[in-house]
Image (tube, rainbow over all chains, first blue to last red; front, side):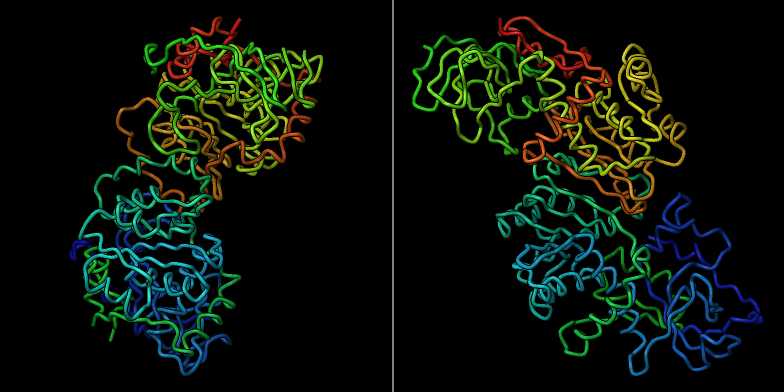
Amino acid sequence: MVDVATTSAVETPIPDLGDGQALVQVQYLSIDPTIRTWMDDVPSYRPPIGLGEVVRSIGGGEVVESRSDRYKVGDRVVGMTGWQEYCVADEGLESMSVVPAGLDLPVAMNVLGVTGITAHVGLLKIGAMKEGDVVVVSGAAGATGSMVGQIASLKGASQVVGIAGGPEKCTLLTGTMKFDAAIDYKAGDVARQLLELCPEGMDVYFDNVGGEILEAALADLAMHARVVMCGAISGYNAMERPHGPSNLYNLIVKRARMEGFIVSDHMAEWGAIQAELAGWLLEGKLYHSEHIVEGLDHAPEALNLLFTGSNTGKVLVKVS
Amino acid sequence: MVDVATTSAVETPIPDLGDGQALVQVQYLSIDPTIRTWMDDVPSYRPPIGLGEVVRSIGGGEVVESRSDRYKVGDRVVGMTGWQEYCVADEGLESMSVVPAGLDLPVAMNVLGVTGITAHVGLLKIGAMKEGDVVVVSGAAGATGSMVGQIASLKGASQVVGIAGGPEKCTLLTGTMKFDAAIDYKAGDVARQLLELCPEGMDVYFDNVGGEILEAALADLAMHARVVMCGAISGYNAMERPHGPSNLYNLIVKRARMEGFIVSDHMAEWGAIQAELAGWLLEGKLYHSEHIVEGLDHAPEALNLLFTGSNTGKVLVKVS
C-alpha cells in the first residue's frame, strides 16, 4: 500500500512551450500496478521515480495550446502525463497519441490503451495462444485480466478460467464476461480447483499476481504450456520479497516456458492491435468497465485500490 | 541421498528371447541425476520406478545373443538397460542404439550420449545461444555442465562462466576446459561475483541446480535472456520442496524467458548433434572425463556422488 503522505500536491507555474511542444490539460490518469514498482528505489525496466519528482503515470487530456504540427488545440491525447493537471507533450520518443474522434477518453484509455494492448500482446504473442487452448488468467476481474479472458474466447480458446477474489467478481466473470469458469481464491484451495476444472492442464497461464496463485498454476500445466509473466501484484508492497514457487521443476517435466514482457517493447504492433480491439468494441463483444475516482488528490488512494482488490475494471482518476 | 538399503540385489533367471529381441550383457551404467527423481512417488515426465522394479537407467553393453535383425552378436549398444547385468533389447520405441566401432563405450556414453546431447540441445536450441553471447552454467564441472561451457566456447560465446563447488573444480574449468571464469559457490556470494564478472548480465543461463544459485543468476540477466531449466539437483533429495527464487519478477524487467526441456523430445536431431560432437571429439576440442565406479552393487553410492558433488565428469558404473 502507498501511504497517502508519500505524495504531496505542489503548485508550480504552467510551463512555457518550446517549438514542437503542446500544453495538455490532463483529464484522466491511468492507475496501473506498475506505478507502485516505480516507487521502489530498485532498478527496474524504468528508473525509480525520484523523491520530489512528479509521479510517473499514463494519462489522457486535451491540448489547450500548441506550438507543434503534431498536436492541434482540442485534440484529445494519451501518453505519459504524470500525476499533474497540465503537462507538456512533445514530438520525441514519448510523444502522445491522439485519440480518434467519437471515442470516449476513459474507454480509449482502457480497452485501446496499455490495458487492452497488454492483454493482447501477452496472450497472443508471448503466450502464443492457439485455437483450442485452455487459458487461465489470474487477477481476472482486473482491467488487464478481464481483457485477457475475453480475447481468449474471441480467439477460440476451448476453455477460459479466471481467478479472482470474491463471489461478485466471479459472477461478473462467468456472467457478463462469459468466462467458462471462475475460481474465487478467497474461498478455497486454488490448486485443487484448477486441477478439477482443467484436468488436462492449462496451455496458457497469464499471470498478473505471482505468489501462491502462480504456484498453484505451475502445478497444473499442460505439456508445452506457456506461462505469461505480466505482473506480480501480490509482491509489490511486500517489505521483503516473498519466496518464489517451490515447483519451478514442473517447467522441466512439462517442457514449459515462462516469459516476461513489457508492452512498450511491442509498439510497432500497437496500431494493428488497437484496430482489432476497436472492431470488437464496436461490435459490442468486449465488456469493459472503468472505475473512476474523482480528484487528483485521490490518486494515491486510487492506486491502493489495485492492491486491496476493491476495484473491478480499469481504475482511472478524473483530474477535474 | 539414496539410502543404500533402498535397493537390493536380486537374482533372477536370464530371460528367454522372443522374435526381434536380443540379450545384452550390461557393461556400464550411466548414472544421471534424473534417476533420483524417478525414485519419488510423484508424477514426472516418466512414471516413478515401482517398488520391486529394476532401477531405470541408461546403460551400455554387448549383444551376446540375438533373434533380431537389428542387433548382431558382438554389437555394443546403449539404451535403457536398467541396473542389471543382463537386459533384453527389442525393436520397439525404446530400442537401443548401436555404438560405432572404434569408439570407447564410456566415452560414447558420455559425450555422444544423453549427457552431450542434453548440453547441445539445451544450450543451442532451448537457450538459442548466439555468437557473442555471455553464457553462465551451474553444475559446471558435472558431466552436462562441462559440455555446455565447452560447446558455448566452440560456438563463439563472448564469455563463458562456470559455477562449481571447490577450488579444484574451478581450476579444471578455467585451465583444462578453458572457461573464461569460474565461481566457487562454496567460497562466497555467487550473486555478487556474477554481477562483477558479467556486469552487462548473462544472455544464457544454463541451470543444472536450481535453488539459491538460480536466484543469484536471475539477479544478473541481460535483456531478453534465456534461462535453460535442465535440472534442479539442489532440490532432488529435499523432504520438502525448497522455496523458489524470490526474484522471478526479473523475468518481466528483463523480458526474459525460462524454459524446461527433456532431451528425449528431440530425438529427431540426435544424429546430427552426435555427428557434430564426434567431430569436436576427434579434433581433440572437447575435454571429457569419466568417473568410473566399479561394481553393480555400488550403483546407489555412485548416484549419491552426484548429490555430494564429489565427482567430476560423467559418473558410470562398471558392472563387471
